[in-house]
Amino acid sequence: MPVQAIIEHGARPSYDLSDETGVLVHKLSIKPTREYVERKNSHRMVAYVRAENPRISFEFSGVIVGDSATGFADQHPGTAITALANFQGAIHGFSPTDGKIIYKDPTRELSDTDEPQVSFSAEMFPGIAPVAP
Image (cartoon, rainbow, N blue to C red; front, side):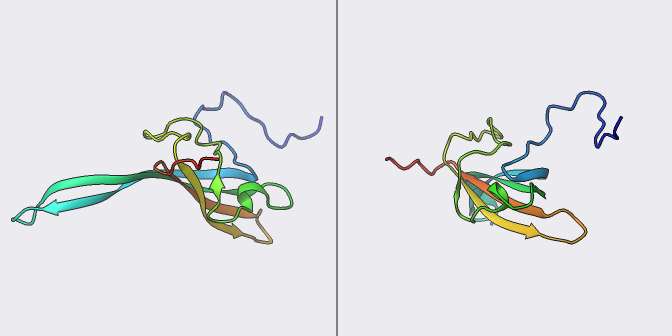
């Protein structure tokens, strides 16, 4: 019997990361945010806060799949993302079907001792309406 590369025991938790196109995802950070406008009163204390411009960002890092980079391992920054495997349902009130997701800040790391790595972010802007055909 040949040696098995991976041996697993038990059931995997349901919160595991999903791999994205061209990337074996090792780490994912999700950050929902807004911009805040504050107004102060005569005592210089914040008396009014308005939270606006909601968005959610995803920061991925992982191993590039295969011998040549494809998918998110080689996408041009600023291009639209049609779907993320790790954003299939609502997260923090954000729905993947609203707005537009933009691919940002890719970094490729190569080493002669480690597997090729990639990190990138994706930011979803719910206020961007789809363009009519």
